[in-house]
Image 1 (cartoon, rainbow, N blue to C red):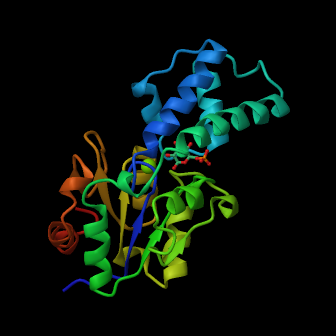
Image 2: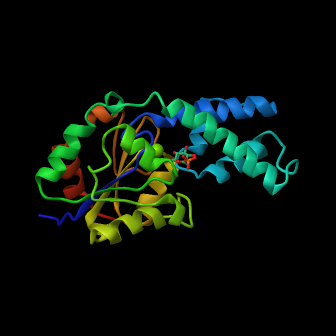
Length: 224
Ligand code: BG6
Ligand code: MG
């Protein structure tokens, strides 16, 4: 039996649908700037830090040279205020289907779990969901230097849990996140329709069955 040390979860779009709140908040800012913004473009922003997302949006609207760094900080703050306004509606009922059951099964086997989110609002979101004590470790986005697809955040989570990346599973809803998990040498579980590179994929969190995930992990041979 292959050794399994830990499971590391992304937050936005995996534990709860805050990915949609990020979309709405960016859309509002993009509209204020007269830059087109839709769900397809938003896919590129999933798992990407706030400032990197703003840069991508400005680039898309050909406005990358229009603002000073300070103005960009102000715009990112404005987006964050829109986002935090939406977060006020978030509660424990917004935990995505299947997630609590999955967490309970993993913990039932004595495995540690962590959150690897580049969101500076991660603690607020976990508190709103009543999950602030559910994870053994939550990576502090403020201390992470590199956004996904860099593996830093997943590797930090593994290290803090005392887990070897090659004996750990990462769960993600974003392409950048899957790339980060794979770059870290972990087994990647993707949640969503088009997640190239995932080692195991489901369409929705409701299909995250722990038995099936473990089977896929055990049958996985890196490099094949
Ligand atoms: C990620 C989201 O989890 O966090 C991105 O997928 C978001 O959409 C990023 O931009 C940063 O979040 P925040 O809360 O720090 O602006
Ligand atoms: Mg996500």
